[in-house]
Length: 116
Image 1 (spheres, rainbow, N blue to C red):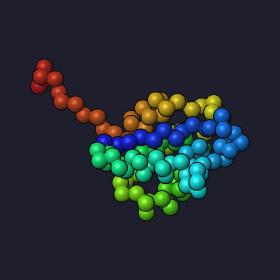
Image 2 (cartoon, one colour):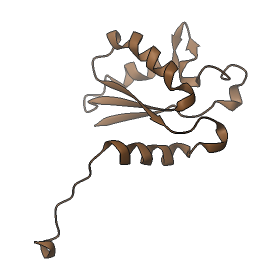
Image 3 (spheres, one colour):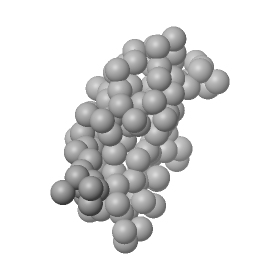
Image 4 (cartoon, rainbow, N blue to C red):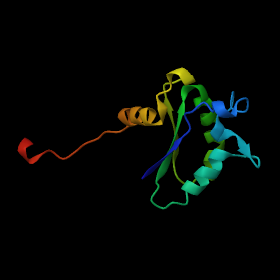
């Protein structure tokens, strides 16, 4: 099972803190919020990896953070980027997730008996 961390918002309610840093990377006790969440997710046996879903504006910061964090994770983590760059064109969590799934997953179903 893949865990999906929704980190594609722009954190407007926390401005000015999140104007240039995504909410998930804000530190609490000197560690980003995302690290606490991923460490908890890594304890769930059925989870085989995690997608961190973010936007183009903050994607680079997540990639840099992940490059430093990889030494602490035991399961794969991937940063998945949706196309929005600002609040005005974001697709919302469900829209962004649907777009990522369409781009990265091959869905195959068994044929109907009448198709055979």
